[in-house]
Image (cartoon, rainbow, N blue to C red):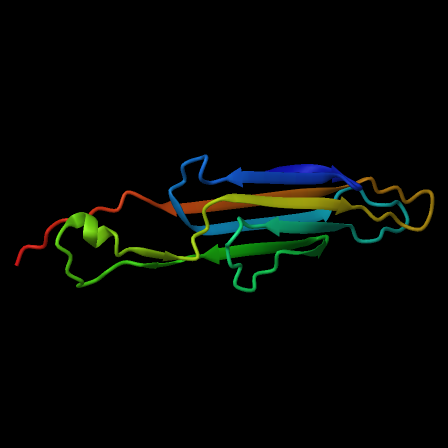
Length: 154
């Protein structure tokens, strides 16, 4: 997604991975970039974008940065992965019992919200009008679902 943001304008994306049937979400990534849009004629201060990433309740972000400020031109990334433990040689009496041994540590399913607010900084004179900045964001949610098990032949 790309768009031009004016000073104080907010871009927000909310995604409910459960409502959209993404399966067991085990990977989430956001990449974002800002660049000076218009620039002042004589001088121009760097534009900035404030960001806030809100994961679903109960998700541990493992130290990933959930808020901050980008000074344009600049980019940022947020990446978070669950650990998925799939049983190896464990025995189970049925396929269902075997599948119940699959464990997703720190599942990432739920409602994710990202918010970006532009802070456009002009130069020091009346000729230095700077009204906007360029903004891009890319995102990806990866889910695992439909696990199956078959009886192992000896």
